[in-house]
Image (cartoon, rainbow over the protein chains, first blue to last red):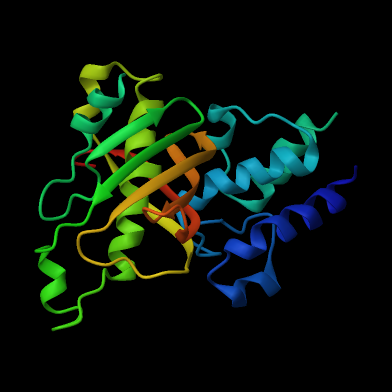
Length: 82
Length: 150
């Protein structure tokens, strides 16, 4: 799976939780889930579980803690996808 | 933890406690219940002369069983029981549908089923059943355990 494909899926998975809808049109690898997209921190667990289901991976709690930006998520998923 | 120990550990107290029994609990589900007293504080205003339990209170009852109590049971499998009082559950989200009114004096059964428990966040499917078994409300509720003082 290419980085672009992972990025597209990551954006689709987080979109239902995004409060700052304007930021959706200008997502870069540096876009943060909390500050930029306005996602409630309690939803990060739901998002990590969605990543696991979508990509067939297992994300440890420590790895989940390292996800702050869209780029972080894409890089982590890229490493974990079979 | 036993059902009684979990019931005792639920931190909400009168006049904002809406769980008085836990009949079943394990790592996947819980069945609790609560009998709404005829003199609950909110009936005076909701509505004068025609009391009915507010939907917001039904959601709270669903959360106290399906998220707080079940969450305590699940957290006790990951934390030392002595540490549990240092934690409190913050309600994070819910999507609930109401079907039938709950009147003063009615006992409701609250049946919760774990959707996931991860990183101290519990999401549950919860049904509120009336005494005759009909569904009064149902939905998905979630909360996260947070250490007090944070």
